[in-house]
Amino acid sequence: MNCPFCNYTNTLVIDSRETGYGKITRRRRECEKCQVRFSTYEEVELLRLSVVKKNGEKEDYDKNKIETGVRRALIKRPVSQDKIANLLGDIEYTIRALEKPEVTTREIGRIVLKKLSDLDEVAYVRFASVYKSFSSVESFKKELDSLDNPGFAFEIEH
Image 1: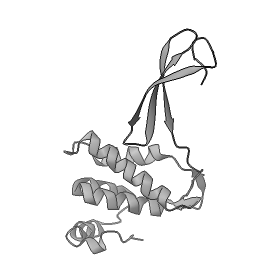
Image 2: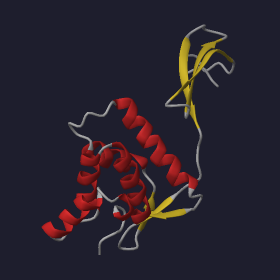
Image 3: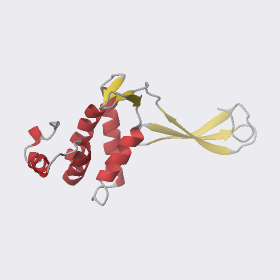
Image 4: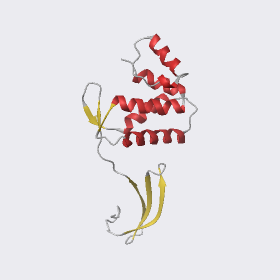
């Protein structure tokens, strides 16, 4: 690792800590030449993943899109930032555990819905209302009723 201040090629690792729930390593370094300290962050670079949208288009997987949707569903809910971070990590892990080069938006939606239903029913309903695009109040009521019977909660409405 080159020093970002003097570009010297040798730096010492002074301290290493796990962060991001064990998914990122923070290293405190010191340049052997100018003695300036700085931090670096390491995380696993996973294989490229494509998302197949409903219309058949493909795009690169972007975990930030999932985070945005999940955070919107959890607005003003009594869920800590730690629990949200754990939820997002679980969702990411589950998607990557599929070990496929392509994943559909439907698969991602089901994973998110399952994880949200375990965490917060209101957030689940909020996310489901966008994800499933309910066509009527009746279909929305049916989804609410399914919360009492979890075996039916993840059927996709067409």
